[in-house]
Length: 259
Image 1 (cartoon, helix red, strand yellow):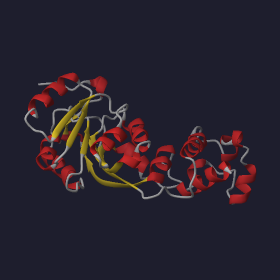
Image 2: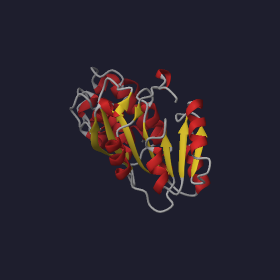
Image 3: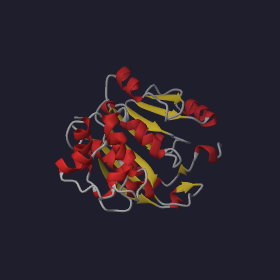
Image 4: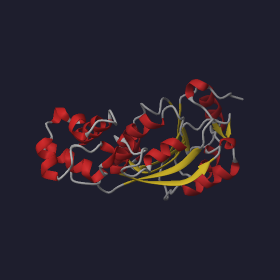
């Protein structure tokens, strides 16, 4: 049996009740392809394979790839992809399958934030996402303006997705048990991003720069944008820190800087 590897941040899900609740929370319409990131030993894969007509597994660990490939060799509905989830082309898979994807997984804690940004860049190819995340990440994703957890991740993800925490999971549901609690979170892509239309690259740069040093005021953090006239026009106090602005205000700010 493959042992968990620290370099891949592996904590294998093993609690049957938790697995059942995750599967029940995944909304899959007929023939909708499901992508599972980091299936590990297949605890979540097994129930998914029972009712998904198309299940694609993305795994980086060669030992686990061999285990999964052997287990599902006779199941035409299951495809195993060897590779890094951070580099996988989800848009290409969706195009090949002719359908948007439902993406799920018990995400390794060490890649969850960069992976969310990677998925945002291909969001037009995704119908829904359900992930197990470190509780600290979930708290950042669901924080509101003024909260100490509110930051770049909150704003960037929240503009494009409705984020809904589903339930919490204790360390005992995994092997080996992590030192932190986890949360299962649903991400539903919005029909249109919050706020006015703005070039996505500019929006992300403005948000990144605004939060780059949390103690800085907006005036100092965004000095290179020469944003003073924009602050005045939008009625934004430049002495505020980034954590005080709503997602919509960030979009308005970026759109005004684009003009």
